[in-house]
Image (tube, rainbow, N blue to C red; front, side, top):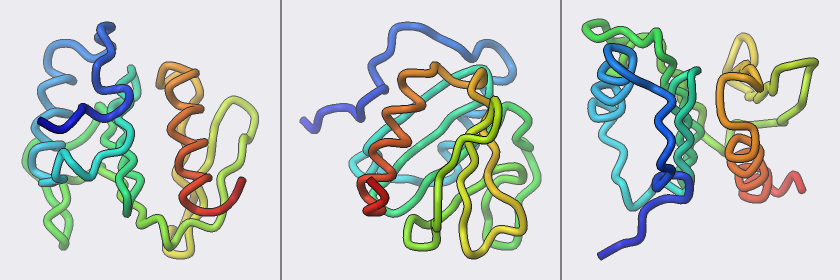
Length: 131
């Protein structure tokens, strides 16, 4: 049996009710193999996943029915790690910049448990060679 991703065993639930159902349904539709998830952080802002290839943000506002052209649920932001050019703190947000995105992924510091968010970003920076 493979160990759970760091952050996956958190006993505190930040998402409840309909937002939780939407986020978990979108996560399932993404078909991310659980063995590839290095970090999983759940908070009032949705779900963040760090895999060996991507950073994925599934916000609580994710669409249950709509998908983009690639079959990704509408509202989900998925950035391939090889396209990330930087991670910076801007005021009360953390921003992830990539070559492809028109604008950075903006993650409010209050949207996720602070320590878990920082650990995910540290791990991502390590994978990117930014530390």
